[in-house]
Length: 164
Ligand SMILES: [Ca+2]
Image (cartoon, rainbow, N blue to C red; front, side, top):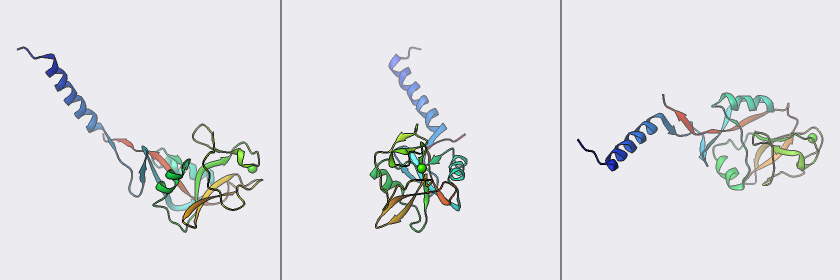
């Protein structure tokens, strides 16, 4: 029986698509916001110091603390946060330059900060090396405190999960 090549190819594509679609799905966990192929959401079960919050994100789907590197991402990804709480984000004065230039996105190759939304008198110098966000005046402003202080974790994680 002769089967034209085009039909072989077509059937192959159908099967390939079916296999691919059944193994990987794209979604975010409950209460997480989907944005630009990542999922954004808080861990509301308790406050922790910065390093522990990082680990909580890692335990929760292999994520890390959120990088709010654009205004649109900050506005969109924070929709489900509790406006009465404070959340660590993935920004830290890694190089301890005691100026705004020392703060970098720690998980993204320690890239420099371009978009910022610092609160009044921030970033402060000295030992306040870790950044949390706090809601006020219809926006989430950035503040610093010592890394062993407490806040909730605001995490980002991938949106692809294997179903089998
Ligand atoms: Ca510092």
